Structures are given as C-alpha cells and as structure tokens.
Image (cartoon, rainbow, N blue to C red; front, side, top):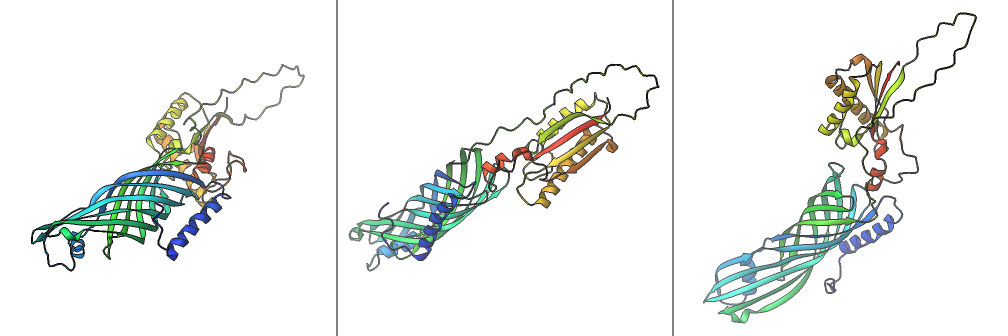
Length: 388
C-alpha cells in the first residue's frame, strides 16, 4: 500500500485529507462524538469493455479480433475507520480492494490475448445518516478515492508478442447508499452499495460498483441502559393512623368532602408504547395498557389524568406537539378498550418541561450515548384519583 500515493495528490484529495484530520481534532472537544472501526466483504462488479481493451493492447498489429469475453465480477473487501460527529453526520477513511477483472480476445490469424486488471485504493467519505428508528438508519455517502490499477496482458499463437504490464493511479469521486442496523450498542451491521471508477492503464476509465456487508465496532459510545418495564405498579398507600377520639362539648363541625387522592400512578416509557418519532400505539404498548386497564376494572375512581413527556432533543414546539399526541393516543385506547368514561379521563402534553434527568446528566447533541441517557424523560404518566 505504500506505493499507492506515489503520484502527487490533487487539490480535492488534499482537501478531504485536511477535512478528516480537522474532524478528529474537532471530535476531541465535541461531547457525544465517537470513533469506530469496521471491515466489510462482498462483490465488486465492473463495466469492463473487453473489445476496447483488446483493441488497445493489439494496436499497431495487423491482427483482427474475432470475439471477446470478460469476467467482470470478483470478491471485494474493505477496512475503514470513521468518526461519528452526531446521529446524522460522520466521516470515514478506508482501504478497499475491488479484486481482479479479466478479459480475453480471439484473433485472426489464430491467436489469443488474455488481460487482467487488479484494483485497490484508499477513500475518504462524508457519510450522512437518516434515522428510521432508534436502531435502523439509511446512509448516503459522497467522497473521493485514490485507486491503483495493476494491468497485464499476454498472448499466445499469433498474439505471442503482445505481453506487457502497466501500473497507473487515478483519483475519482465516489458515492453510495446503504442501511445500518444497531445489533447492540457495541456492534453495528451495515449493507452498502458504492459506485466509483478506476483507470484501466490503457488511457481510459472503468466504472465499478461494490456491494458489501460490514461489521462495525464503535468506541466511546457506552451501552444503553436497560429499558424499564413497560408497566410498574406502585406500592400500595400506607394506611393512615386514625386520630385518637377527643371529647368535645360542642357538636363537631361539618367537614367538606375529601378532595380526590391519588389511587394509582404509573409511568410507561415512550419506547414501550410507540415507535420512534411516532404517536401510533404498537402491539406491545397496547398489551401493557390492557394490563393496566384490567386493574381499573376492580377500582372505584373519580378521574384519570394522562400526561405525555418528551426529552430535550428537537424544538420545544415539536416536543410539545408529540407529547400531546401520545397522551391523546393513550386516552383514546383506554376509552375504547377499558370503557373508561370520557368525562373522567383527561390528556395533556408537557413537552420537555418536566424532565426526570438533571441538567448536567446528558450533555451533548443527539449521539447514541445522549439518546440513551435521556430515555427516562421520554414517558407517559397515568394518575388515577378518587376518594377512599
């Protein structure tokens, strides 16, 4: 690999290298950024023009090419390291090998030409992420590569004198798309399709696409805390000690009716009820609410208050709207499944105004570590009140 950059890099390559070095320095002072290492394997497919390459190799001869064939696929692999700035943007530096592609030409007078191209290089890419859920993201990449092509061709029969080898370097843009899934916080799996081109050592370029599956190990992104149970029944209220009787001469005053007191207070994590960035109840969330509704059947209560909460990520207006929608969804389900009187149940959203975490607990932007730390703030509280 030390011979890969013998040619002078162009300004675009230098700019991308400077960007990568600057990103590393920036991440050292950015809370929530983390590095990672990965390795991938798959298949590379080239658009090899066997007729053009054969004609270039036999230029100057009086041979006539009667037929050509090619093998345009081979195993590809890559090794890479990256830096994730936040949940949406990262940068990667990697080494790739596209494999070997071959072509063959049959000539008249009778002869045979066999050629091979071996391609390897390095790349620097910006990688954008679009989260579909907390574990699944779409990927878009754009960057630049420096590829080295080793070409050789040899002949037999009438082409016996056409043997030759060549080496060439070429810089070119590259781009790709992919999907990434977090199996665990310490293991990410990725599927990529990456498009690029490389020099063919005959004065032209060849387009190629690499399809790979990669395993990625993040560093500095701690494991997420275990999710809380969807429904936790509180301890029963302690019995109050009745006051000692006091003898009075005057008749006792008429006391007002006691104010409704909390009979039940439960808290559901937002993830246990809804999908990411959604106010539509999932089947596991409905099952948890069914358990809660079955307990309501044996209680006498005056009112139920449903309150939605959100974490600080995103705008305050958006979080307020999302928490209200989720509270309304829980209310609607309890009215429909447990036959709760609509007049006795209320729903409201408090947005990010009542966090459980403390201000200094979860510093930084929306990295996996910060998202996991803020999980207690994403919740739906239900309080059942009545007189005993």
